Image (cartoon, rainbow, N blue to C red; front, side, top):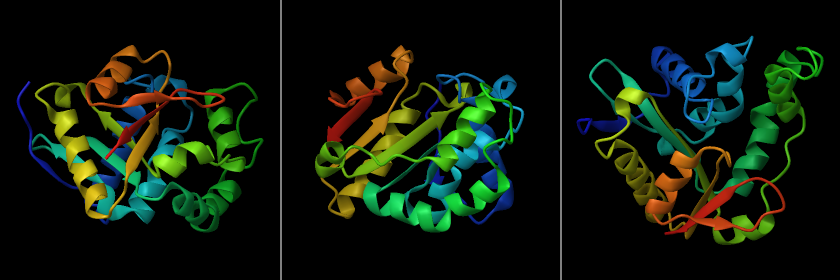
Length: 202
């Protein structure tokens, strides 16, 4: 796999935003295609992508194979501030658009809607040391060639310029390849009551 060019995400370009939403869906099953899991193809992106493009556009970067974005990294330098802004500026409209009974109970869509309506804050012990967090997703054609590593290093450099001391991320416990990738970059598992969270000192 060749090393592909990186660039800032074009967050004001509706076509690029749609492409990033598509990447989010096509990598939403432990890195695999989650298209068949959801009735609403935009819902996963509304939970895990859109707010970052809207509220943290300067921390959104993509890898581009010449046809457009084929992978991205997004995140925030200040998780607590981001959570507060989402409560004011992102979740209210989605809660109106997606009532709790929008989808059948037990469905994947219902689980995402429940997250929209009930957002727990990140663990204080985590954000004290690792105040930033991120999400990174790469389509198969962007995997390899160091593209993921370079995307993350670009994001880390942007955080360092802001004086951020550490960054964390959540990952599925069943996504062994992703865990291995992050640990190779120096991330370490953090002790949290639930979930699988990794942290990296910058």
